[in-house]
Length: 341
Image 1 (cartoon, rainbow, N blue to C red):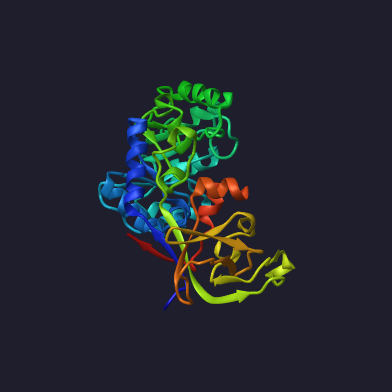
Image 2 (cartoon, rainbow, N blue to C red):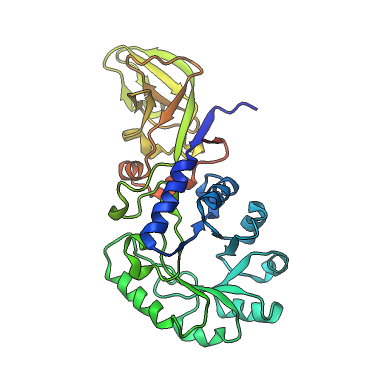
């Protein structure tokens, strides 16, 4: 079935981003492919990153693990939310490893799968998921592949980063594990003191800029494109869209595009967003509707049925809209036909 929205995805850019992150960290580099590969399609992302050399993958839930499907024999999948009581049967039937996050999960895994490998999350200062460092004694008897923690402020120059690193370092060697892992995308940029044995980037893989150190190294991966539904002339003095927030100062050519906030292209783009036709920038006019936006065509050669790109550099879009790069990326929904090139 024809879709009037496309998401053009650059496989080479994705792989190049992973390669830079691996080289920057100097250690094994995994990939967070949760939230359906940050909205780009977890299966396709995983295959592309495997081809680049990635072997460690992370999803949030057992449902995501099941939808991702079987990985190659040389790859490992970890489930970040651990194993709840209702997840236990799925976890035991899966080749994926749970990331145990609480004393209850530790006890549950010891009872249900004694001797079977797992990963463990310890909380070093985020107070989200993980055992407290003083609960580390509960881990005795587990076969831990990766002991990990998560940085709360890695995208900022915060003293909290060094505090968390020190707390994590105190556990390295004390808690027996094959590998230790602390850094996400932004943590990789903080330097090799944060890398340990394994890094777990997410946002930067997909074109997000986690910190200034990544500027010039991270390439855009996702390029939304929308089809023109109608080309029309708006006369001087007429208004466009809900609230009549835009008034034409002169007669102008306008294209109506098949995209809106129901597609993850939010109202916050109204003040700054634009479509692109070749080398011409076509600014948005008026508000973003649920399924439609209007753009000024000027002298661009645009007709009904044409495809126009949308400006969607994640750092730029975040700065312009006040939304996070994560929100912008993961909100692009299944109305888009995802096309890898």
